[in-house]
Amino acid sequence: MDDPSLQRLPKPVHLTVVIPYYKRRFLRATLESLVSQSDQRFRVFVGDDASPEDPAELIRTYQSKLDLTYHRFADNQGGRSVVAQWNRCVRTTQSDWVWLFSDDDTASADCVAGFYDMLAHPAPFSDVYRFQSSVIDEKGLLLRESPENPPLESAAELALCRMLAYREFFVQNHIFSRASFNRCGGMVDLPCGFFSEDASYAAMGKATGIVSLPRDRVYWRQSDGNLNAPRPELVDQKLAAFTQYVTWASQTFHDQGPAYQRGLRIGASSWIRRAVGLLGGVPSWLNQIKFYWFFLRFSPLRLPRVMSATHAVWSR
Image (tube, rainbow, N blue to C red; front, side):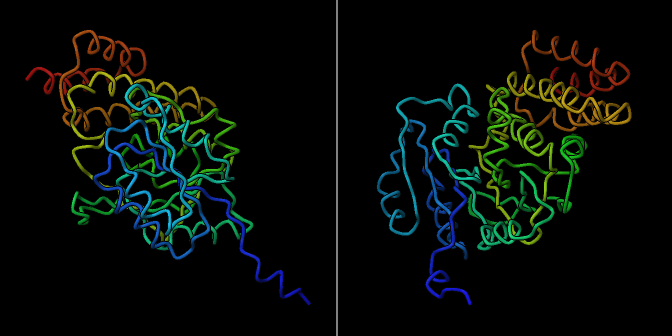
């Protein structure tokens, strides 16, 4: 018979919710959604990126409700590289699993419970677990449900389906193993963090695939502070990040064969034609030339359609 005293021991905590902090506006809602988790087997780390918005009072309120550690970094890294800030926050923690969250999104109450339930099953094991996602507005009202993620997906499929708009992708709706993070050398650093989550989770999940948690959901908040929001000052960086990501995916999954590479070329062409009006501005002439030169080498047959779609927007 089991020793009753052992049954009373607390279950181990293997998960840290890492919040790279910069803006206070929605932080209370984020922390409140963590307080509401039905399973409290997690720690919270808030890494302040030398923000001008002091969260100290709010942090003190929630340190009595959560196992929460707050650290203010002396320098701002997010202004130079948002991914560098993500990476140093993750490296400041030590848990086996990391949920890289944000300071403005929220999660349904059973996300942590669903993650531990999945870990309790011997298969399928993954280095990356993915929640379903929804998009909310600044008031927390539902704008749309993201396309349903499949139960299991290879990293190559993820990269391709993202290009083809079969997936809606957010850094916040994934939990990853520290082992895979270390193996990959951290999150993939692309200009202004654009497409970095796609590359990072595909890299971390390359060995095991990506497993979806069916009933649990992350609510990504759409606001004017999002990286994806139209911001003219980031157009050149976003365009560079897109071409770097496409190159990264082509090289990383070179072993998938000609049909996969053809799918990437189709996906890259369709993505830029869909997204060109949402980038938020017009790239410099030099970066337009670099972009067209990239497509000439990557997918020459699709260059005319890409040029037609982008020129129609950039020449206005």
